[in-house]
Image (tube, rainbow, N blue to C red; front, side):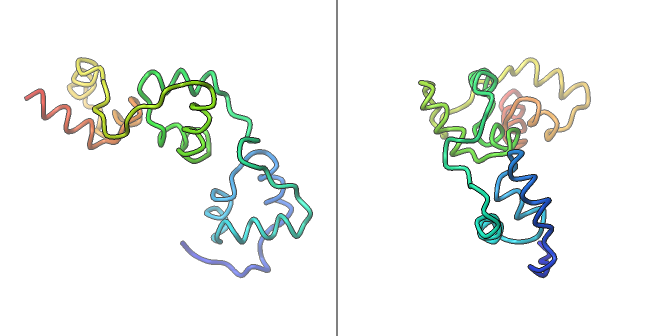
Length: 143
């Protein structure tokens, strides 16, 4: 990460982006500073920070995607929040979360077809919401 002088932070842009739902972490990464720096700047500017649970997330979509096999981490990336937030929201909605060490059920025949069609492990991982290593390992199991 390249760091920038704190005096050059575009505060009005940061405020606007934060208020549109972008996380402190994402803003810190975008502007080359830590999320605590962003937090302090927003507080100094009088911005009301979101408390846990106030981020508006499309829970129906998240529940559906999670139940279809998408990982907490992939959902967090997709919706611009952490996997912990996704997990907490799912639990609050009454959804039983999977054991992170349990084997995920995947449509192996579809994955094999995608592989034969020339799709990369990374593309398949994104398509099925798992790490590319999981895809590679499942294909190895088939051989």
